[in-house]
Image 1 (cartoon, rainbow, N blue to C red):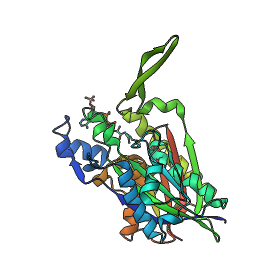
Image 2 (cartoon, protein in one colour; image 1 turned 120 degrees about the vertical axis):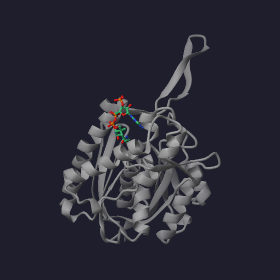
Image 3 (cartoon, rainbow, N blue to C red; image 1 turned 90 degrees about the vertical axis):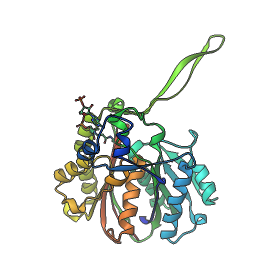
Length: 329
Ligand code: COA
């Protein structure tokens, strides 16, 4: 084994759409404010009968079919999410839904960078020949954790799931270069923190019991961080791939804000027609955003086999990273 190839993609969205006009009945905002500042017009939100496992399994089945595999062929399933149905992890339940008994399944948490971190993590197993076929899912239901009274955050996020199949290759590695980074000193810029109240258990022993607090974000800091760090990471990954930005066919950034996409494109001098975006319809779907846009572009015959993709995820942690890969076998 010498490398890996991304050979299938899939995505699944919740049924209910929530547009900016509807949101303006919840908080003091307007379609004009949200579209001008973010490019987002609507987002999907998961209803009571939809779960993260269900959406992930739908996306996964599509990706597996496109790759020409069956779930029984899978050796590993990585679920990148910050919003599992179960805090112990949801990947095991997806493995059961898919009927993929051979696959080791585990969750990976790196917020909006999760899918990219998952892709690079699983690539290492494929490159060493440990596994042959793997599934990387990015899925989030942030609507569960958004403060729907906070107009600074509730207009940004949406729910969804995306997945890719990655396979070991014996001829050539299609993962051409990558860069993964973290900066915990800026952790307080974007959080979904546990907050517990002290609880006296027994004798001298005190613990805490509590819950997760809604998403908190310093929007301006996160914006500054993304516009600086994302181009740096892409340039580093390109350097490792020994490539120039002109050789990249598609810029596939985490869908956080159209202004971030435009600013990164400007810094890297990538023309807008090479920058993939579906922010208007889905908003920021966290770990799901990269595989969802990828799947859309593949199914629309925009991305063709052999196309070079520069992908970058960024978000809470703070965490960020980039991967340069060729689509297809
Ligand atoms: N509707 C109307 N007004 C709003 C609003 C909304 N949804 N959200 C904020 N405002 C108001 C603010 O209250 C503020 O008013 P004030 O000056 O009277 O206090 C004003 O608009 C400007 O707010 P500010 O937060 O400075 O706006 P901004 O230009 O920084 O844009 C973001 C806000 C969130 C769009 C922008 O900071 C951003 O996109 N940051 C990155 C966030 C992100 O991508 N996070 C996820 C990363 S994975």
